[in-house]
Length: 100
Image: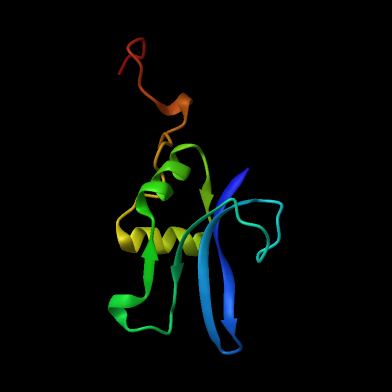
């Protein structure tokens, strides 16, 4: 399974994060399948992050799961973390055979 998560970089007390598509079994700072951007919490408000939105939407579309922190950042940017997912389970959907 592929997950979208941050990889911590930077010095002590000065974190810098790179966003990447990674295998779920790899360690936090392990190998990245594809780099997708970066996030710098210490930077000024307008220059805190840079993301490859087309590639993020692609990975979400093929089933990659974002971590909670990445999902919060994507929500802030305006990318739905549920791209390509059905919001209701099959048993809850109304079909033409269902009577109301």
